[in-house]
Length: 405
View 1 (cartoon, rainbow, N blue to C red):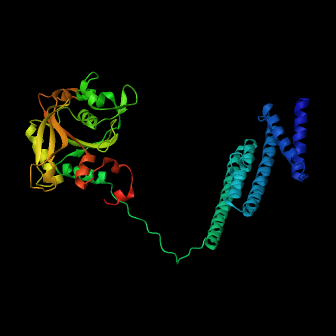
View 2 (cartoon, rainbow, N blue to C red):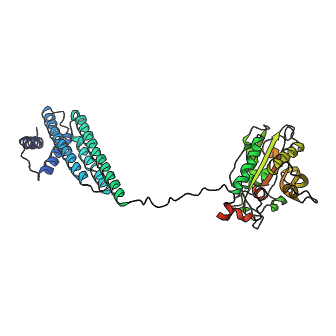
View 3 (cartoon, rainbow, N blue to C red):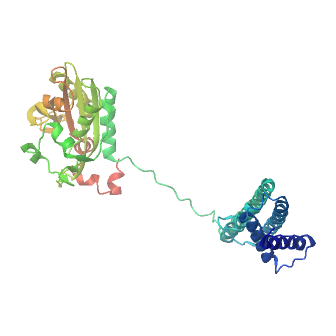
């Protein structure tokens, strides 16, 4: 054995003797631990663990490391209990938890020495460490419960309630007239077997116009004052894109019966127009659908909504996505049950047979199926149902107005 190894052996034996005899003071404990680790590292670096004598020395040194770790764990548990017991609020308690159990806490620092523990001792040390962790967590839980009870007791003492004060009653809200009108419309069509579909309010130019038979150079686009975000993205000007999306979602030429309620946006603002308003559009597609089906459906709906005595008329009109197209009027006089004089007619919605080009653009064959579509403004319906003369009342959030409904 060369001189360096002999010196290493002597140092190790002296260190073991010092540890066994307990010739250690509190001041030199850190140096002893450091020396133990250095000796073990030297033995490993010289690849001496195959030597029986050095293997025995390394195991004894490792056992001394185990003793130090066990001592550290016991001291940690005792110190943690004292610090946690002394915590006066949740903040101090959390600081104690981080100090002892955090990623950079005392327990983690102790367990860094596990690499120097003999392999057969590591499970024992691991179990001891878990036991200490559980004990500290138990201390923390008990202290949390104490602090919570103390805080509650303090609140009970300081936050007295005068039970002689009158109660604060919560006012019941009101369904907005637009919602009431929409519910009536939806209920009427759902009873006829229609589904309710929705779509995005920020829409592409393609869905808002092009696939509805309104190419970029079509003059009918000027009828709708649009809010464009980019050249290809805009706030939808009608809920017709939902019809196109519904057609594309279904198997080609399969039957559809749907309505699409929702917000739409146009550059318009006065007593009867708003830049943000609401529409309900409907679409029916199947084999053999005719204008007679459209007329009968809308007559049933309008009489269901306004009363069986409501007078209805259809006037020829133009829409780029329907052909033929019509405006539908109701008699205001019949709405108010005035039997004298000629009735005044009020436009209530637009409709028509789905243009064959719209069917083709969205995957349907106009030679096999046909359909009809219609659309109406919910604001106008609500104004007629509830006798409202200014559209702006719907959006001003005046409680005096809303409480009437």
